[in-house]
Length: 442
Ligand SMILES: Cc1ncc(COP(=O)(O)O)c(C=O)c1O
Image (cartoon, rainbow, N blue to C red; front, side, top):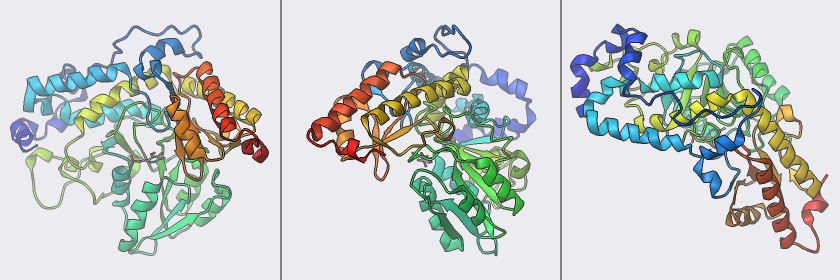
């Protein structure tokens, strides 16, 4: 990186600000992966329909197993390999010049690809290693030694959020957990009541990782704003499968990553900050990329850039951002509305089959309350999940929840039926005389 800094030093100072976006686009074009898809366009017999067979060809792993785990790791698009090759070619042929031929701007460009998926304006998203880092940057914008120092969360948040904010107790933060009534839903009324004039931040998942319950973030944001608190929406389990309008919800922050429904792979976490709020914040956890003139290498306090660079740390994770692009393009091309329609149809099919088999479901049954996953709770769930994996049905298991199954736009009805047939067979063969799952059914 030191080499990179030396190489761009002369040209870099003020470059980001001096050149217009149009000039930048022309400069970047040869060096950043081309936005046009490299495979022929899909057949779309009707705008509402997804050409599933076409898209399946774009995801090689689908030929090898029943892949129902996109809530954990979305399948890799074929063109991801092309983009990673572009990255390697650029590095090997352009060397340090790559920084000012596109790499330095790649975070902003990547965030702009994500913006329509999150339903936010362009130039409001910065890219980071993961949610934990993005959330830490948000947390570093606030003080915890004043009367307003409460962080309100539900007990169903992803553990990283608990761990991170627990760490802020040492700075004076008070953590309030709002318990779920059933480990599936949040208690919205109780959450809203817990937010008061002493609340600084409410980290809140739009879709819960354990149950796929969809939270009414708009209601929480309204209450938070009435009392001067901020809400950080964790959009990870929603982005790419549940349409979002975070801008019109007035969300203060949003965080997430690309590993799951976005099929973008690891290392491409994102942080959205509401544009009018961004200018008022002074994040404490920043690095040289947050400075308004990073290539001046000024020491001492930073003069912060505008949104989104203001929230940057150091060198961007360039290969991860090349890789992430393929998934965003595909999700963007199909459209999250169309993905959602298919997701609802496939999750409903899964639920109906599970109900017919008498399995308990730790997932909301109403379509409008459920994200992209279905959590099936069978006796000895962990061992059953292991057997499903052995039989090439790729799912995962979460303690206290059950077997998580997640159809995405590339899955077929036949795959759902096959996975459920295998699941029923495993459960019955483990306990042929007395099928506990059936007995426990509501
Ligand atoms: C809702 C949610 N938030 C956060 C994470 C993980 O965040 P990180 O990017 O820090 O690994 C997950 C991962 O499973 C998640 O489901």
